[in-house]
Image 1 (tube, rainbow, N blue to C red):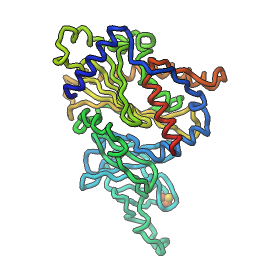
Image 2: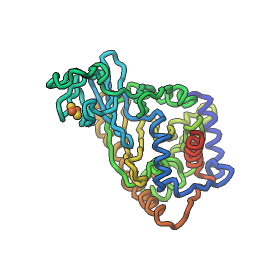
Image 3: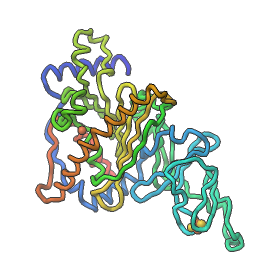
Image 4: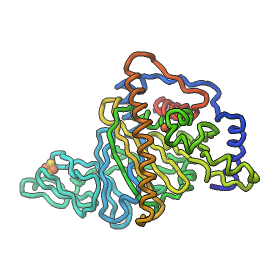
Length: 383
Ligand code: FES
Ligand SMILES: [Fe+2]
């Protein structure tokens, strides 16, 4: 993190903590409940956000070597992403060109070819159709036109980004805009996936992202977990187009920095930085490592989503002596969210459907939520 940014953060956070407050929006934000439960709204989000936007679907480390592949499902689209011999990535609809079966069932692995289980058509890692049993039955087809259907994919900042619609242009630099530099500063390329987990949740996908966007709940819901390490105030929000960054002070912030001259403080070391990447990803910087989350709608039911979590360690190989430390990191991140945030969020989802109210309120102190929901509203309105 550059010195000017650290200086700016330090000054602002000291002022907020001294005033026992956090950064405020001008007004409260009224958020309609329907956006979390209305099937028509969910379909609109699917068509306009989850079919047209570059989405983070993997860590590049998971597909490091030629032949390594990963499948991903995004609200009804199954895709397979494959590392090519020249080091590039290709992605395809995971749909057989004979009669439409899912070709690759495994979540990840290494393969030179993919064979459809139904009638054994064989595709190369480059998507080309390689073999058709009883070929005389298909003498009239042009095999060159029967490869797996390509999807736009790109590797950037150590992450794999996919647009699950064939033929769409992938312009990741324009999409990220000023967020490009912010993500580059995280130095993810070269990091290794220590653990990955995927689990269905009975939540609208937005509630998963909401979980990360305010500190207000930390001293209450997380008294015994992350609330012990992170302040419930003093946070800064910075917006980068539809994306944002949320900088939260650790409990070590004041004791460690209060006697250090403002221009010499290593502010970042005493923060957690939450990067919200539009529309559905959260990349959390934790000093010595990064973890990232995505949430995608799961079918037509707005009350369900699929959550994915990756924990990256900066070192390629985690030695035995370090393993315990990383297991502990994994337990903290999973424990807090699974045991505290998501159970709370499930009651929210249920409460939304109860008819109790047609809106909820984001306080002036919950600025990250304002930014997230405003970015969605603007994207849906512009489309
Ligand atoms: S559907 Fe795949 S080989 Fe027939
Ligand atoms: Fe939380």
